[in-house]
Length: 132
Image 1 (cartoon, one colour):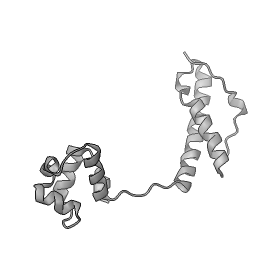
Image 2 (cartoon, helix red, strand yellow):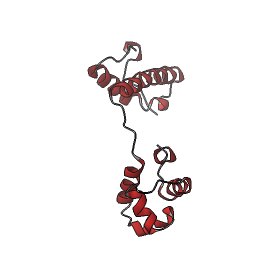
Image 3 (cartoon, one colour):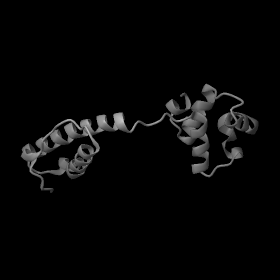
Image 4 (cartoon, helix red, strand yellow):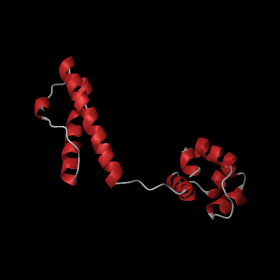
């Protein structure tokens, strides 16, 4: 199956404190991403443990230095409609009518729980985004 070209014993797991550390960790993650395919069980387990530890550290660094802004519900709806190339008439069924689509998208009417449910099921917009 897969053999390993990295010396696992040479890998030092330490906190990621700057961009260079983060880039090294990302390269290591890329190198170990298929570690579950390594034939030797001991080597596979060691590689997966290292992958797990480095991934946790990298994710922590990303959360601190590259935070993701919360999405605005109305902007999310507009983006999804545009992405799917739909008209307001085509999405009216999720809002309860064409007038309501316009009112909601122009922020003159709030989303109802029924609309949130319909948009989640019909357009696949996560409910946590719509309820933000």
